[in-house]
Image (cartoon, rainbow, N blue to C red; front, top):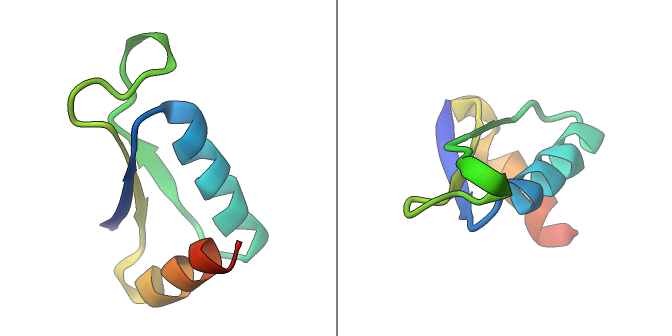
Length: 62
């Protein structure tokens, strides 16, 4: 798995993950902090290494 984006909140990361799911790309959100915030490091969105390009394109097209 590779980090493709970092978001300030879990909600934003989850919305991006859902967008990827709709495009048939699996994703995982990590780094969830207290109270729906990502804390200092933010919340990271990861995808399989062989799907990075497709995932970035799907997010950019949205």
